[in-house]
Amino acid sequence: MSLDARGEASARQGARLYWEDFRAGEAVGFGHARASAADIAAFAREFDPAPADPADAAAAKLAAGGLVASDWHACAMLMRMMCDDYLCDAAGAGAPGVEHVKWFGWVRQGDELRVRRTPLETRASRSRPRIGIVRMLLEVFNQRDEAVLSWLPVQLFDRREPDAEAPPPAKIAAGNSAEPAPRPPAAPEGPGAPGWGAFEDIAIGDAARLGDHGFSRDAMLGFARRFNPQYFHADETAAAASLYGGLIASGWHTASVWNRLCVAHRMRRPAASAGRRAAVGPTIAVLDMKWPAPVRPGDTVSYAMRVCDKAESDAYPGFGVLTSHHQGVNQRGETVLSLMHETWVERRARAG
Image 1 (cartoon, rainbow, N blue to C red):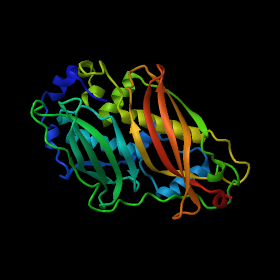
Image 2 (image 1 turned 120 degrees about the vertical axis):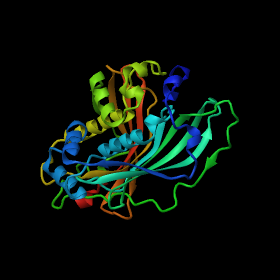
Image 3 (image 1 turned 180 degrees about the vertical axis):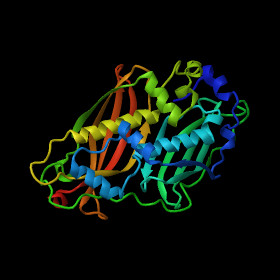
């Protein structure tokens, strides 16, 4: 998503940061957010409800080790820290997508989070000279200096001097240290339900309709004011002057609704006749997440998924990695969300 000339004045007014201010390799620490029990519960009720099945709930508790924030709550907290640190003070032109979202740990009740941002690549747009492009690595750490989450979005910013000759592109490697390992899979102990819902039973090409969601003006404003108060999400008057011509939902609102429908889809599975079902999760990563079209007040988005790939795990032989493509489409047939999702799924030998 980006702004055109109609939104340029609004984006530039009062801005203190432009594309030139983001230099490849220059790491900056920022932000502070505390994960309270009340906030964790409030977000979960709306976007990540607890599994109704006791076996699923036991698996989640065992994997996480207690009360933890939804993965998408952690993303929303990061988005808010970004807005408070630089996005709302920048001549920002939006973000067409995120190359990856990876989770390395859990955000637990009482954790205090901070962020490090490192531009990995900066270059001027060839087709739109006033725009500069930044591939920004964002890493989230808790008070124990443990990495819990990382994003790699492609962010667009206005150039301070769009008529001047652009500097050459700059690029660095993805980081100075090895990336942390993903969270391990976990499942409750005890007898399982052989042959039902296990890794072996899922076929490439399997598809499912996850459900529909209507986006209201009030819900969009509520989410934006809590987590993503950029003007085109949180200010109707300013949004009307942008390319969008009005208020649009935060992409993380669109994704959080998708997560709720994924959870609800899993909870609709029929109870196993004996024992327990195969465990799913936690999520390893979301890749190539894009928002091709904006979500507007009154839109209804239909979400669906399709299994794309399966892989065995040498590190965790009791589990496999399932990759699926997820998509949200509005009532006009426009894709508003597209992503690849990687998660652990328990194998039959362990579940049985």
